[in-house]
Length: 338
Image 1 (tube, one colour):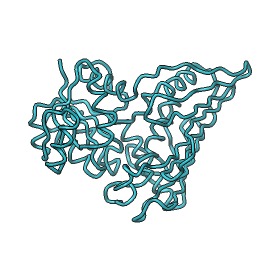
Image 2 (cartoon, rainbow, N blue to C red):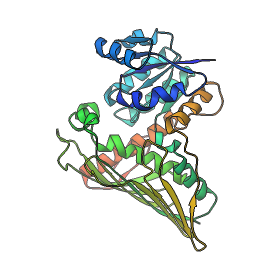
Image 3 (cartoon, rainbow, N blue to C red):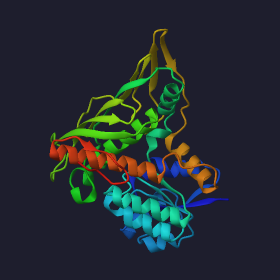
């Protein structure tokens, strides 16, 4: 069975990663793309070999699609996802799923009721590096996990700045853009859920409109693990990384908070140092492979709708903590609560 995809949003991320990932599946094709601008829709379709460019959601949903990939600005996700779900389409949505975790829960409930697959495009858990870390921790190779650190401050390319640094109403800012990824990656690698967060945010010169372009967070997890994370749009020369420290060893992952299958993972224990091997499969191709399997009834997407609710609830709590100056509880069922 061929899965026919419609793209909701003529986006850079779809062009750079998602179109190729869909076509890399033996059973995937992109049949239509939607942009609110008819001219952009047609130009984008022509440049990327997509049969149809449309300018309304109704036209896209009636274009013979089985599934949609949503990569519009954050404030549009909820309405577009609910319309697609109501039309019986499977939905892979960019993070954050919505502007609030309450709205994200509406999407999950609607997908469950309709019997369609809903996935969150948290690409990082598809990286071989992060799966190697998760497997090492689960196998007890670092003993009992104690603490973690995530370095995920980058320089936002000019081509991606736009609404992310200028439009609060569109869900801009580094917390909804990057902290959600760190929340999901920490959950995935540790196999643990965060319960509390304290955060500071900053405006270091890139973001306007009262938005933050940097954040530092301290997390507490159910098991007692503590974590710290740094997210940013403004650091041109910082590398990315992820460390997990346990009672019997430490993991040092370098250059792994990225969209590409690169980086390295070092395990350090009393026995010495060992570089862990891991697959270098394209992160988005792996995500699509699992999504197609879920459509066939074989397992679940790599990141489910519920995972998207968790990461958004964590980001909400971070923003609330930064505003209040207090630690905030993370509860995906309730949203953030002081």
